[in-house]
Length: 297
Picture 1 (cartoon, rainbow, N blue to C red):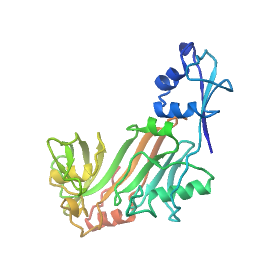
Picture 2: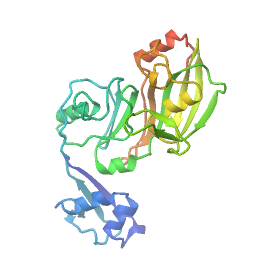
Picture 3: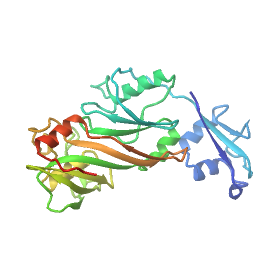
Picture 4: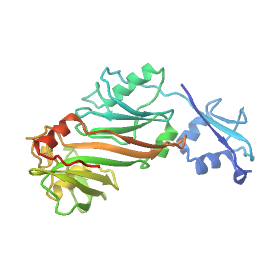
């Protein structure tokens, strides 16, 4: 199914070229505009095919129609909860032990395969566009864009919160870790603190503490691979279950990390979306094992 978006031209844009309006005012990518030029109904002005060099007038209706994209992924029958869904975006509550993307070694039962099943069910042909990829063993909210324009507008636009169970209790109830991160080598996926690495900033807040563990909330300024895991380990509080970075697996068998909240404006409808996902059962049990009973916000 194609996605058509229409724009009512306001007086201040009178006389502007269609290309400039789409690129500068509506933030369509150069690649998308170029592809629309070669589709008969790709760009229309007042219902008539238009060129990017044509000019708009106040009161005109400019429409762009993005064609469906082919989805070649095999479908998966695994049920993953959908937290939010509209014409342009979808949010899943991904379980642990599930990859977001397919890879050479993993072709089935990824979130991409789950999305392929969703597309079949709704008679859609959409590419899997994951805005915030989570590690295989990190659970929680994953945002997908259903078209190229939404994907471009959503880049770095969502505010995300994570909950984690960590070893020990941070000395400060709130804190920030500002430490660059790099990959150890081209073969191993493990990351490290490296003065020459990519900038990375993590903010944390202590929510509750128990016997040898604590529950923290985290917000990121950057989105580096393994950022939370590396940063908490570097300040002496590795995630419970995260044996790659020094965590113990006695109360949970995977890194105790969950994307619990996501706030953003749906890119085309303009609707404010505030999505949440409760802690999964294994993290709830980890809290019980650590005797962390105090309620958190």
